[in-house]
Image (tube, rainbow, N blue to C red; front, side, top):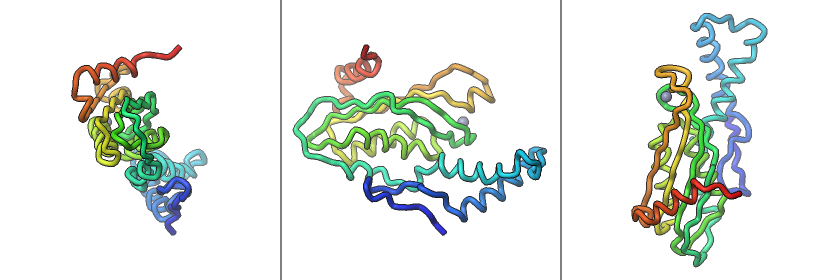
Length: 207
Ligand SMILES: [Zn+2]
């Protein structure tokens, strides 16, 4: 029934297929939702919609099935490098927990290793695991920071997220272009000079 599969090469769970039971239950509820909003779920265009939405939601919220600590520890190496490591412009596709509407943007993550480094792609994956859950941008920022800090135990972690919230753009105040920025820092990044270097590096475009 449950078709979540352990992707061994990466050492963490990935939603390769959809959970049949969840798909069936969700489809039933989405069919009802279509009726309640005044649609006819039996018309041709909507025939398969409940099932598609059910699968889309499982895809968009697949982060619940994944363990970010496992992702980081699956590629940890001893290394003497003690300078800033920055992964910037990591795409974020998350869902706000208040309206279940997307918020979309970019995360910039840095850490200063203290004897241990991780694969760069693992940082991006950790961001994705937390983003693919119902979130508020503030908590997403802090969870990424805490996970890297607690797992790699570096000299410091910095996380900045810039995102546009569809719940703000499509409804409510309808602010079409406003961008929300959140940031969180530990250790060495609490020093103004280190933080400023990080901010400068993520703001500079390499030509
Ligand atoms: Zn919202």
